[in-house]
Amino acid sequence: MTSNEVLRQWVAEVGELTRPDRIHWCTGSTEENQQLIEAMLDSGAFLELNKKTHPACYLHRSDQDDVARVEHVTFICTSQRDDAGPNNHWMDPAAAKAKMNGLFEGCMQGRTLYVIPYCMGPIDSPLSRCGVEITDSPYVVVNMRMMTRMGSAALARIEREDGFVRGLHSIGELDPERRFIMHFPADRMIQSFGSGYGGNALLGKKCHALRIASAQARTEGWLAEHMLIVGIENPQGEIHYIAAAFPSACGKTNLAMLIPPAEYEGWKVWTVGDDICWMQPGEDGRLWAINPEAGFFGVAPGTSENTNPNALAMLNEDAIFTNVGVTADNQPWWEGKDDDVPVTDWKGKPFNAEVNPAAHPNSRFTVPMRRCPSYSEQAEAPRGVPISAIVFGGRRERLVPLLMESKSWQHGVLLGAAMASETTAAATGAVGVVRRDPMAMKPFCGYNFADYWQHWLSFTDRASQLPRIFHVNWFRKNDDGYFMWPGFGDNMRVLEWVIKRCKGEVDVCETAIGQLPLAADININGLDIDSVTLGTLLEVDASAWLDETGQIREYLGQYGDRLPHQLLAELDKVAVSLQA
Ligand code: OXD
Ligand code: MN
Image (cartoon, rainbow, N blue to C red; front, side, top):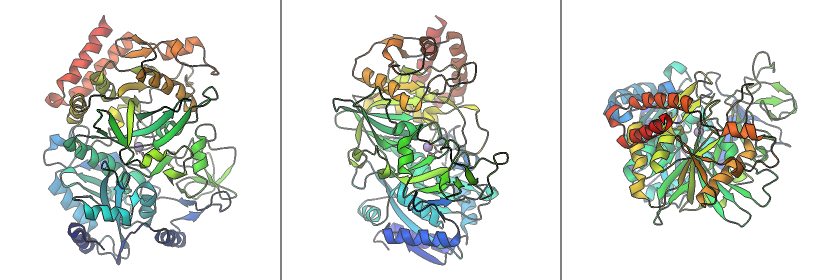
């Protein structure tokens, strides 16, 4: 058990409410993990994959109605509705607790209640924060073991410090009508019922490391962001760390572990994180970042030898696959993987392309970060890594150029706040609809976006050497509907320009919307791209942008008086300059 009285009492209370058959305190040991896996193999929750090609790899098929995050039933429960903001669904905390108590009542009868102490971030980092998840799902336990520093070491830290995030989860009956993901930032508490899917059930990830942590970060003077962290090493051995925010399923994992094109001999890419970044000003005035996670929970479809060879290599062993297809020799398979032919789809039915894809579009892999060939040992550094540049990016077929730099930190905050992207399968709902997704945090900010932008703006007073801010768009299409930029490893060419700007090595073309690269400064050697295409990728269509600024103004208008004046002033400057 534990010497932490608060934790002991909370577990006892939850036990009384949910009435499990037994309570298990997770240590995170190999033996414990093995026992859970064996139990899941017995129950059918796990299927063993080809032992030769994929040792210690398992397939999990989720309930067919439980395959993605559910934003419409995800709530931020603050006493004042306005503190959650128009960006969140809100429920009164007392009403939410009453509703959840009703659902949790007796829900673990016949099940085991697992207590999972975990640490988000390196176990000995002052930037890390701890939590405890209570769950009745062994799938959650084995995933949390990969995704966080889980077990005895985390419990020891919890016993040393004051306060931890409390997360209560039950799969319930997996009934979509009885599914709620509740956040109580004031109590540092999460309650999730009715789903076993990643972002809804692995509470360390979106619920803690983004929604609760963003609110906590605001009061403590740091930032919790939906960003990858990547280190780019040049042939001279100099490493620049970049943090980049993209909406879900827009290629963060690919960018975090890209392999540079042949032209970049001597360059190396180091992966620190692929989804979440916690940043804090250091004594030197720079922002220092940790990845609070210890594993990847990545989107499987589209991952291939061409798009992300590092990911493919790390998925050969010790990985969990959720909702992918399988081949005749029992290997995991998803659309875009290779020329193999799947025989069974993600529902466990014979594969028929006319009926179902082999893998669900939001099928996932879970794997420890250390398995990634480009894994950076700096991901364990207690002080984190210093961030040179922040990159924002969305999925936009039109309008938005391949690359630009903000004119200032304040203008960079506007670039982030105005981000928009076409929706993907990572959440339930329509796919391909353009929606505003500020800082890629629309589904994840645990408080009012207006206050969040104010918090971002406040960093000019908190840190003297802030990173430069950039905006990219890999997804621009031509009139025939083809992507104009090759993306994937070739995104290195864009990152090279970003680093050159950080080092003051290249000039810019000043435009109304931002500072764009001179075409000659983007390395396109070895690329099948002509100067007209590159010109289009870097063009600014003033009248279309005026229209866009109108839409941004309308979007920001929802935040009323709470919206920071500075943000509107930045938007005004852009609009005036476009009119000129
Ligand atoms: C994720 C997501 O799982 O953003 O990372 O949906
Ligand atoms: Mn994500």
